[in-house]
Image (cartoon, rainbow, N blue to C red; front, side, top):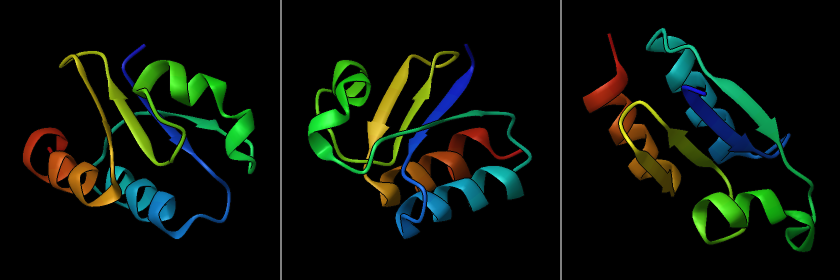
Length: 80
């Protein structure tokens, strides 16, 4: 599966992660989530919570939330 970003359209934290992934040249897939937290079952299944953004990196066995942590991970691990 590679890298998957769970994101909400219009979410500034999600946009920051999108921008960082693109700038780093990372290939990834976006799974757009519902605006209602109660409808984010897939996010809860993969991360244990319903907030976004959530990054899943199967190649490194990493699932993480919190945009600042994700941005740091992109910079330190995924940037080419």
